[in-house]
Length: 52
Image 1 (tube, rainbow, N blue to C red):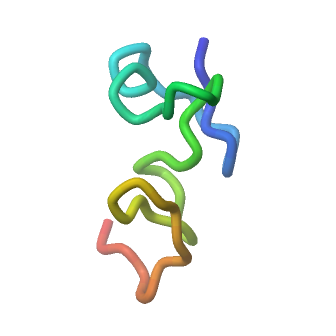
Image 2 (cartoon, rainbow, N blue to C red):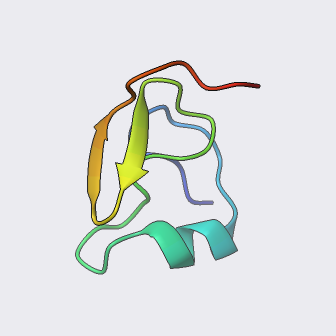
């Protein structure tokens, strides 16, 4: 099962297929990550907390 490289949370195969770069084996961040977000092809620190 794929896991987020940042927080270790489980992600679905579909999520991993869409959001994992070709040269990496797992997504770098996921929707459960509070401190990082995807910004285009990059990952950056979140500027504010997410509303949950």
